Image 1 (spheres, helix red, strand yellow):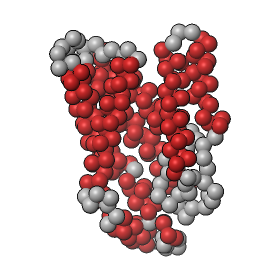
Image 2 (spheres, helix red, strand yellow):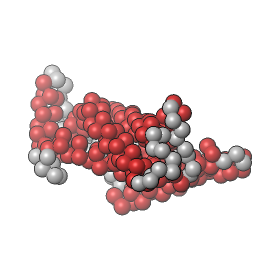
Image 3 (cartoon, one colour):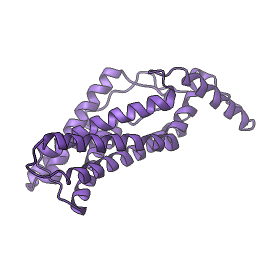
Image 4 (cartoon, one colour):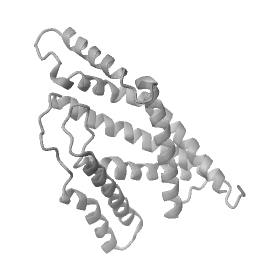
Length: 240
């Protein structure tokens, strides 16, 4: 049974990860390429026709296409990263479902529970941290990487615990404790950069943050829905 559950989770993760790539190329990648054209202050800020902006956009895109981490180009790296992330998040989500006792009955109920689980994961992993540490485009000011990672991981964990208390515990005191846990990292405060200057226009940064949350919502809902659908088809008590 464990092997089938793992295969179901991996299948859901790989499909969701693969579907994430076109969503990113529609919503977030164009904004990333626009932001890259401003790095180094080389973007033309004149008020002439938009042709100069397109030229700067193309130059930034070509410059960063040569910096592929795995030598696969921007598209290849994105697909591979999404597949790995999809598989990893799917296994994590399946583990959370098993540990919290979430079951996936056959049919529509299993799909709906998977969607709710995916929505909860999106809240904990994406939305809650973005309240104080929103997704940022290249060229935007960043705080120390280690500090950001530590704060993000703490926020994800306490948000998950808080959401579990709010959604699954009947006691009002525990629900209130859950709300406190969700709010606590933001009262503490996310790490902020020392220098907040950036040549990237604010509208690009805000558009990217919104687009990033939208694409990740699509990813998590698809992942949760597929996970619920696939795991509902794993026979209970079946052998590996």
